[in-house]
Length: 171
Picture (cartoon, rainbow, N blue to C red):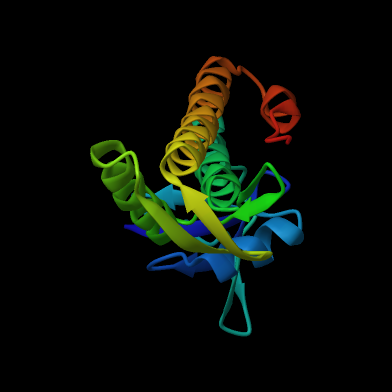
């Protein structure tokens, strides 16, 4: 799959074979978006062997770019972390797996406790606390996906660039 950079509804000529978080963040910060494309954009002309792009991107491509943007913003929110009873819990996927494992043990053994390293220090957590934190994290992550789903529906129903621009991931 190839990815093309779009600015002001036009291709910029920048194309990637794959997109990293760093690349996407850079282009979003420049008011640009990145869309998965099936075919490379065709330059309108060449100036000193440099391709010049100017063709307007159709709405379906802009929708794909918006979907990618929303998916990345959901992922960032999903992994951003939460605060639960003063404990700053990491919610990246590796931390969630470790938390789920600890919560599973806590459900099996009500006397289980663990020293948990949070973003803001070490905490001694008993079984009910571990289970409550794991449930809170799971709900938080599911809410991030539910929000992405709703925004995807809005993107699918949008009939203009203005409507797409109005769709934002807001905390």
